[in-house]
Length: 633
Image (cartoon, rainbow, N blue to C red):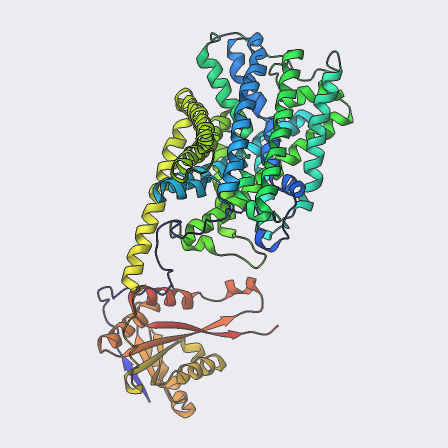
């Protein structure tokens, strides 16, 4: 039987239906089990690490910071003239003292929080969800800036060896970022073996440079063009504090081992602490060795090369070793940037599971990769590089602020932890952490005050905005959870009688009688109840042949032809469904969809099925489902 319904004017919006399952709401980090902020994809599937393997896998971010930390000091001191650069050594000694405090503190974090999490876990345990949000926001900023700073420093190192790249630092950074993004979207293996060779080469290159350089009575070669360095500022306490704060960027990454304690073999705490101590010893040796060379050889910033490149040329000359070391440094910095592609997506997934970020950040591909997180890292880092023109000295203050915010929260959290728990010798531990918190707080405040107009304000804006974002997303999921009645047992589901069920199958006039419609109608009949095939036409009077063919075919479904003189296809179906809903019937819409043999062929088909499904979800409460019809090769 076929009948005809004239076109109707659009009606008011119907009820909105939520067709996505939403997880139960809860406060961030509300469970007793501390979260693990993995630094690399698939960490739980890899075998656990020894102390040496942990050093190789987790230390590159910290060790590679020697490529820009000492230079950050020199760039600040040079404002008082080239002679002031000699103060790099005492400032580095102060940074080394802070490094000792931080390494000792993170050894305590490892013992107190063996489930990992670093400053995140400390903030959650000691201060509660609000401060843990601050720690999370600081970590997000830290991860993004790690990518930007590492790539900018790597490009500068590569340009020191290959001067042709000097005018193209931003382009070099963006190419490197695109490569890292592609590799991480595809999914790369994460293991200590992958990082072993570049890490060991980097350590050998820097330590070798320090030993050979100190053994020489004078530099083997000088690279870079001299730059006028007029003194335009007095050598003051404030200038020294600024240099100290900028140089503290060399300490980034020392918290990575505390984040990854669960990755170690038992006894995990002892192995992780041993690795933390080895990292501190190596990093301190490199920094002090480079500072000694800078002071002895009067190394100052020169055009076209980095401070590290000058020290390399002074130790090895300008031959193949010079090029090799700069390439190794670039590779190490690239791998350091890559840690954020493992760390930030996992952190975002953790926040999403705690309903502080959209749940799509929890989605992983089969490799497994948090692809939405990887894209977010890449986009944010690219924006930073473009806005700041890939200039390392402009990125360093922002980087250091994010790093030291996390350090300060961790130190203050430990002070509160020791005060509350009061284990043996707690007073000495609290005093140590208090000193570390004071030092990192001073460094943060100095950077904020002295670099505020040069971009530090962006961190003060970004961190609170991230915290507001986390709160806003949580409130939304809270409303969704309340609407869904999560946590409560609902009434028994109502099962509609067959007479109250209506299954609608939208068809196009040209394929209303075909294998496609046969498959869709078969699926609709399997649902039970009345089945109606709906065809929209702007010339319904010309469909007499279709009505006759439908009667002869007799597919056990009624044919409904909707008049649409304005050539609309989606709206008449939606309005028809809404009118049927008004009668109180249970409605399902079965939409046939052609699946071509190759994705490129999808462009050859209309996308009306997707548009119709989206409109039905937005304006009706009907159940919408697709029936795929695959076209063979």
